[in-house]
Picture 1 (cartoon, rainbow, N blue to C red):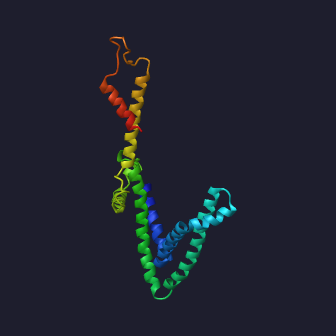
Picture 2: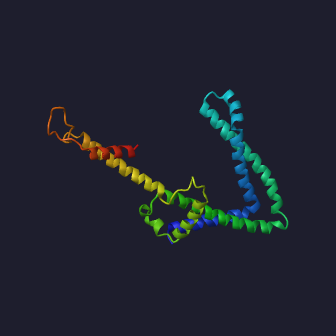
Picture 3: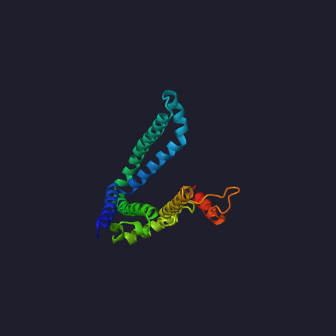
Length: 221
């Protein structure tokens, strides 16, 4: 095992231990609190901004105060409410079940986290450009499967072929370099110039060469 393998094991283990200590109900309610705070911020932002804008004249600062303030206040309130609810699951006969489910939840969350991280790498770096410590990791195959499951679960409009972003970037760079070379050749003093009226035998670009340069220029836009 290399450093990447150890890091992955550490992330999954810490997630599992943390969830076991807190319990399944508290972990789920914590997620609900964050999602709820985000939803409240999204739907209540305009109303809060209208009040904030009366006292803050800078639009950007008013946006930050309204958005951040509403989110933080909502998160605090929801965390307090969910904390009271979680206490019922932490007491009595439900506590062992709650912690066992929390352990399972933590393992699943850790796997999802490392799979998301690998999915980002998978999209942004082609296979040949990845560093050796990724290629040589024993967990690389496991991560690839997890990333593929996550990718197929995304809507079709958001699905990206493995390495597709990086490959597109490389192709765009190649097209830009080709267009740059063509433009340099076109504008260099030694490049052939178009024949002028009354000047016979003057060298010029043929139709195929002009068409190729037009294609390269369009591809770089």
